[in-house]
Length: 80
Image (cartoon, rainbow, N blue to C red; front, side, top):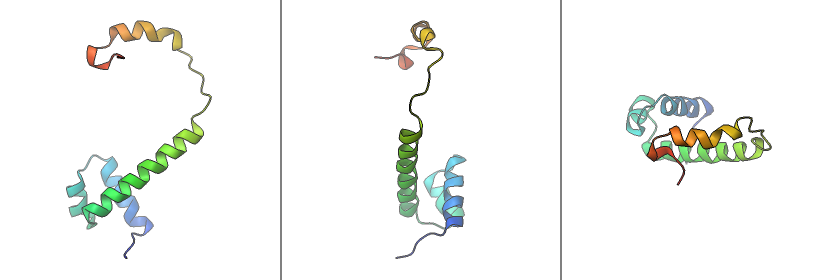
């Protein structure tokens, strides 16, 4: 099985972060779209683990402003 080297992975993720579609990333990088999707999934899962590990015990300094904020949001953004 072929594997992507680090430079290829960086090029694929950079193209996706810039807003390119999977097919356009495939054309630009030469990496198959199934490989791109597997890479995106793996990166997303690793980001989720990193954020779950690191983003703990953060103070919410503006929590008292939230009830008033919800009244200013459009209906589609307000909590259910």
